[in-house]
Structure formats: structure tokens, C-alpha cells
Image (tube, rainbow, N blue to C red; front, side, top):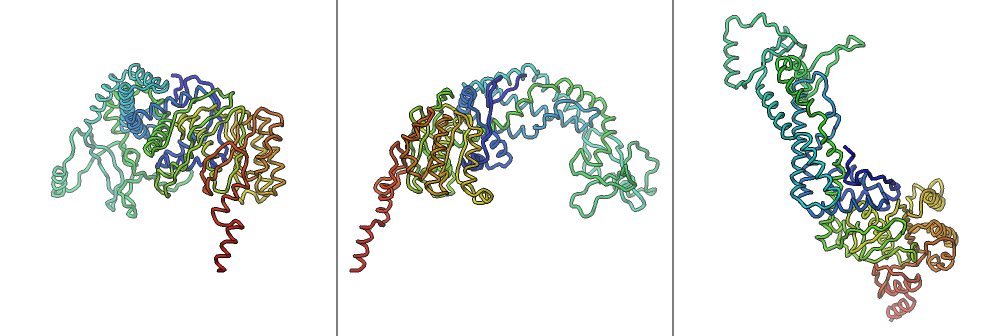
Amino acid sequence: MEEFSLMHPQGAAYTVHTLTDEAVNDLSIDFLVENLTEKRSERGHLRALMTQVTDDSEVIRYRCDVFEDFLRFPKLRTVMEELVERLADLRDVARFQKDQEGPSLWALVNRLREIDEYVSCITLLQDTLEELDVTSEGMRTLRQIVTDIGRESGFPELKADIDETMEQARKLKSITIGVNLDSMLRPKTAGVLSLNDSYFTDAGLMKRFMNFANKQDGLHEGTDVSGMKHFHAANPTTSELRFVSYQKSAVSNDIQVEASPATGNDALSNAITKPVTNIMKKTCDDIKSTLKKYVNISGYMLIGLMPEILFYVRWAELTDKLIAQGMPVCKAEILPADERKCSFKEIYNLKLAVNNISGETERIHIITNDIDFSDDRRIYILTGPNRGGKTIITQAVGLAMLLAQWGVYVPAAAAQLSPCDNMFTHFPADENDTVDLGRLGEESKRLSEIFDIATPHSFLLLNESLATTSVAEGLFIAKDVVKAMRYLGVRCIFNTHMHELARSLDELNAAEGDSRVESLVTGVQHGERSFKVAVAPPQGVSYAKDIAQKYGVTYEQIRAHLERRGS
């Protein structure tokens, strides 16, 4: 069977790039993973998928459609999550690939039970997908696959064989074990005396024990059972009574002790495995014949879909919570990658919205914004006051791009975008990372590494880059970096306090390249931060005046205050 995935169409030839560790950190990917699921066992799977980026438009549209089916049908999510839980124990596909030589009765019965469970999973999924009006290529293909599996693998016949064979195995109700004692009355050897088709009862056991105890001759003599194995009594320091097998080491005369509390894999069970299997030879042969008929069943591909299923289920659950909070979400329209366009209406920072949903922090009033990237404005120099929302909008755009390319609904009212082949971030580094090179050297090194691998289809997010040196030095390097981005053709948000950089648009746009540079500002209205962004010249002085007036620190305000205080 051709490989099937819910993340890409069958036969699709596409490439993926891994987000850098810096991008994962700066875009709070781990924060999102932790809020998608409380189960640690799921987080690794989600993170692996969320750190991969593809710019293949066909693949992204495929994912968008699959996600929409998960979002439209809560029942599909419920069934899929149940399947993930049931398939967790069937994850080791190797167990189903071949039949081992001479398996014990327990191994054979467990194998049958596993196959029976898998048949049930396939049947449940088939019934669910037939009931729902799924429209995505991925879900319709999955529906056809599970239908074909049920038909081609002969599930009705398989189910009948399993039921019949399990019924034979269930006839074994009890085992009579003989235990020889040493001179200290400790178990010395043990073996199977008989297999029985009825249970021992407490009354029966007590009766036999009393009959034995009342006999004059006391001990039975001459009992000879093959397959005896040496044992010693359980370790009195353990809370669980178990038989432990003695084995001599191959390299010394030391006695090695092996023990396992697992039923069917402990010393006692191993000792009686061979006699039980021999006595029930026909049942074992029937089970092996059944397994050989179906061991290559073509349904185990479903196990490989578990991480993808979890991804869609958890993101659909989070999207439902965003909708319930009244936040806009939308399915992105995917444009050709070569256009290098991007447009968001009423975009907001997903991290802030998730914080509101969790209720762990004080509820934040979220401001939405519009932003467009096109031939006329592909690189934005974003300026504004401290705590005016520059980092928030920068991160918001990065997350929205990634969500769209994962196939997930975007935190915006409308979105059109040409996918990026990778996303690179350049946020302030931790002080510990700048010891060897100094902060400016470390920042320059990271910028150089980005340009080593970035392409015209990449997306760059720079946050207060080069702000740790003198204004003159930082501005000099920043201008060259922006000119290099224009030459390369990337899309970028460069948020900075270097207002002079935003005032240098004519100089920057005169450099070679086709990605125009534009000034973007975060707004302040009546001395209050509005957190709204707009294409406009930098207004550093007026911003400072607004803030100064808000806090009463203009010359006129301070003078008036001093005069009132003096009076």
C-alpha cells in the first residue's frame, strides 16, 4: 500500500525545513504545545510536527481541508481520540509483522487479542467516516482505505476465526501444579500435572487439603512429572509473592536470579509454558494457523497516523475555545509562493488569546490589526514607544504564518499568504550567550548565520536587533542588514527604537533589490498606547511628548507642580 498521511497528499514530493532553536523559543512554540495538551506523552509528537515548515501550496491546502473536517465534526475528534488511546498498546508494529517460532499459549492468545482490537479500531473508524460528510481529500482517502482494508482483509472471516479460536483457548479454566519441597519445606521444583476445563473452587481446595491432612500416610509418593524446574521461596523483603528462577551463569558458577512480576513472563509461567503448550497442541496449532492467515493484514498503517490525529484533534479543540471567546479565526487562502505576498485582517497574538483561555493570568483586552506584505511593502521598519506592542505584533505575524502552513485556522478574520520556506527570528539573546563574543558580536554572528540559509521565500522577524551598541554603530549595521534583506527579497518585520532607520527609507529603497522597505508605527492616542499599527513615518518625538504628558513630566507640568507645591 502506498504511504498514507493526513499531513500531505499521497505521492506528494515536497520538502520541509526545521525551525531553528531560536525561532522555536522566540515564537513560544513550547508554550503552545503545553497549552494544547496536558499529556506529556503527546507533547513530543505535537512539537515534532510544529517545528517543521513546508512551503508547498498543495500540501498546505491539503492540511487546511483535513483540519476543517476535524473542526466541523466534534464526533470525528471524539472517535479519533478514542482510537489513539486504543492504538497506544499496538504501537510496536514489529509485533504484528511475523509469527515467532514456537510461541507459548499466552503469547499466541495475546497476539489474537491484539489483532482483534485492531479489527475493532478499523471497523469503528470505517463506520464513523461513512456516517460523516467529510469533504477533504485526506479524510475521503482515509475512508476509502479503511473500507478497502475491511473488504480485502476479510474482516468478517477474521472476526469469526478469532472468536472461534479464542473460545477454544477459553476452555482452559485451571492448571494443576505439583510442587516438590526441600528438607526445609521450601519449594524446590514445580511442574504441570494437568490442564482442566473447570475452575477450582475454594470449597474444593479446602476439602482436598483437609483430606490430605487427615491421611495417616501423609505424603504421596512416586509422582513423576516432566518439565520440572528449580525454584526457591519468594524474597521476604518484597511485598509481592512471586517464584524466582535459579540459573547458573555461563561464565561462572554463581547463581543468577531472574524474576518478573508480569504474568506470562515470570519464572513460574515460563516453567509451565512448554507442558501447557504441548498439552494444548491442537489449540496452539489452530491459533498459529489463524495468525498466519492474517499476519500481513494491511491495516497497521493506522498506527503511524497517531501523531497526526493528535495534532488535528488538539488544534481543533483550541480553535473551538478561541471561537467561544469571540476571537476571529479563519482558514487561510494560500497564494503561489513566488508572489511573496501576505495579508492579515484583524490579526492578533495567539499567545495572548491562549493566556485568556487558560485563566492563569489577568484577562487581557486583545487589539487586532491589519497588515499586508506585497511588492510595495515587503520589509517593515516598526517603531513605537516601549511596551507599545511592537514585539506582540511581530510575534503575532510569525505565529499566524506558521499556523496557516500547518493547516490550522489562523488567528485573524481573513488571511491570504504566499507560504515561506522557513522563518528566522532575531530576538535579544540571553546574557549568558554573549560572554565570548560580546552582545554585538553575538547578534552579528546570528544575523550572518540567517543570511547563510535564508532565501527570497523566507520570513524574518527582528526584535530590537543591534540595539545594544551605540546608536551610530547600530544604525550603520542595521542599514546594511535591511539593504541585504531587500537584495535577497525576503519578507520581514524589523521592530526597533532606531527611528533614524525608519527615516532612511529613500536611502534603503535606492539599494539594489525588489523588496520595498516601509515604515510601520504602533500608535499612541491621547497619551495612551493604542497597540494599533499603521503605515506612517516614525514619530519618536511626538510619542515621547505624549508619554511625558501622560505621566506629567513635561517642563510645563513639572514647573506648574512645583509652583503649586511652593504655594
